[in-house]
Each structure stands twice: as C-alpha cells, then as structure tokens.
Length: 74
Image 1: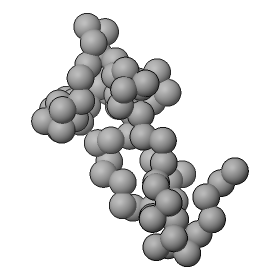
Image 2: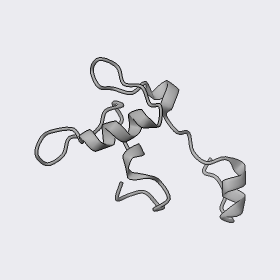
Image 3: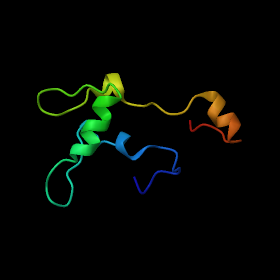
Image 4: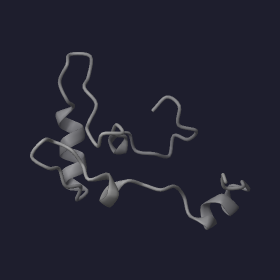
C-alpha cells in the first residue's frame, strides 16, 4: 500500500498477488478487512482466497486518466 500513488484507494481493497489478505505482524489475517470485503460482495473460496480473474482491478478507465491529465502506461 505504501507504494500506491494515491490515497484514493480504500485500504481494505489491497490484497496480495495470491488473492489473499496479507497477514499482520501477529501472523493473523485482518478480520476487519475480510468483513469489509465480504460486505462489498467480494467472494472468498474455502482457502480464504479471492478469484483475481473475477475481482482484480485492471486500472482506471480513460476518463480517469484524462481527468488527472495523465497518460496511461503502455
């Protein structure tokens, strides 16, 4: 999350590349993050993973890039 260029991304939407909620310093997943994602309609499998093909964000649309006067990456 520290490397994201914007503070517009809600913290609970950041999950790892395996589709899992990353463990905290105490070694446990964040139950609050899990709860918030479930409330948003995110589905977890029996291993606690999210299907990234279904839920992964692919980036902002063209209007966002224009609004922020930026060029999308190639």
